[in-house]
Length: 329
Ligand SMILES: NC(=O)c1ccc[n+]([C@@H]2O[C@H](COP(=O)([O-])OP(=O)(O)OC[C@H]3O[C@@H](n4cnc5c(N)ncnc54)[C@H](OP(=O)(O)O)[C@@H]3O)[C@@H](O)[C@H]2O)c1
Image 1 (cartoon, rainbow, N blue to C red):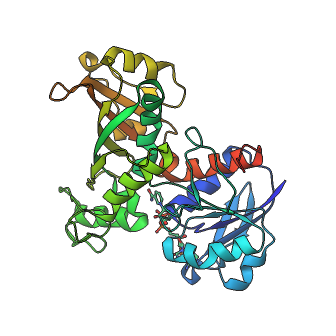
Image 2: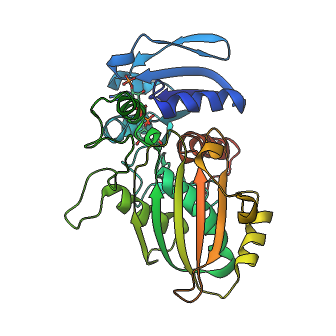
Image 3: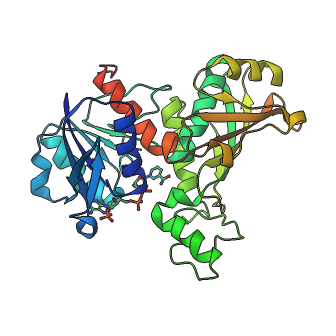
């Protein structure tokens, strides 16, 4: 039985982590729920018991907690994760704060196991998780030469404030979170722009893909786009492989791999879509076809719930791996 703290328990990701801890029957002897001062005092029911959410402060990092599931943004993580770590807790963090730190492992459990050289483990970016799942299968079978992503990311990727902006647009009101309306629109802009014209979201996808797949010089590029969908991100992946293969062979490989769900029957209009993937735990793949514009190149369309596999579920799967002693030292 473990003592577990959830930081950001009132957020979209945090509340979903709580649902998963309950559903997957994680053995918990003590649960502590943290938020900022805004939600302190709020009541949350977990396994029939009511918990009062507390404001996270430095003194409360002492715990003791075996595991801290952190889902409260980069600044909060940078401030509090090292303190939890100093007091002996293992932190699984959903923000981007630690992901590219060479000492920190960035984990998708079915792709790369967690390492505990530091007691902070980073959960990757949501669009990256659903992309490296299928890419890892292709890498093992054929090797990767180049990857180009175009994403179609739902508003829940921005937490509650993204969902509220879509609702504001539906009511004819101005956006508060995004720089332009998201209702009836698409925004080729996620996170902040850098000097080179790429957004930080695009850089995250590029760098995190290389780190998770352990291919530091893999050519990767990305265009990340926000779309007026509530739940589940879609990613169009254009991938060039080292070894020759066919669309049929790729479909057969995906079909027998438990880490992805193949939905690919264009004649019956069957392909992955956010309306079907939202609320489900898997990574859905389809529209597999050869790109005849370049040798050995294929299109793969992937859809997954960004709050589940893209965030909360992946974090809880990391926790399960740690509990089951599957980390590498
Ligand atoms: N949404 C996604 O698809 C997704 C995917 C991958 C990763 N993530 C990451 O997960 C994290 C949470 O995202 P979200 O979508 O759940 O956002 P959210 O719905 O806005 O929730 C944010 C949570 O963080 C808490 N928080 C904020 N400042 C805090 C502080 N100083 N101390 C303690 N708690 C604090 C908030 O508490 P209050 O209720 O008090 O404000 C709330 O519980 C972010 O780092 C995000 O980048 C999100």
